[in-house]
Image 1: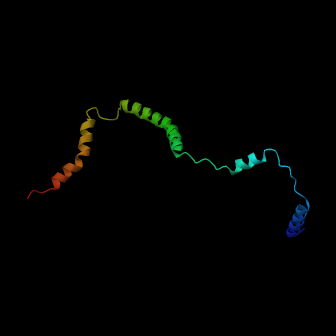
Image 2: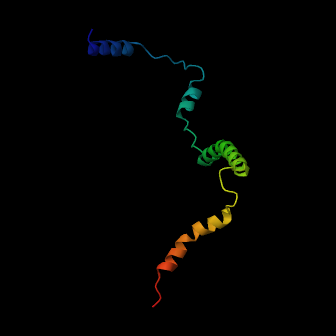
Length: 104
């Protein structure tokens, strides 16, 4: 059967049938539920939930790194002075700039 002919037959049958005056139970409520606009997404709530979910892994990582920092290392020489090494590393660029400058 041709789709166009089927469509014409269905429209003809629908026009011959008189609509009922009865309305289905709670019809207007169902329609109003469909028409009601969706609530706007709460961007602050999304951020808060994401941050709360990220708090536990961050806390675990912090504890693990804190424990790791207090574990004694056997591979490092006992005479190494970490604060002095850090100062030398940070100030190395300044020392190089001062060495390059030539007094006139």
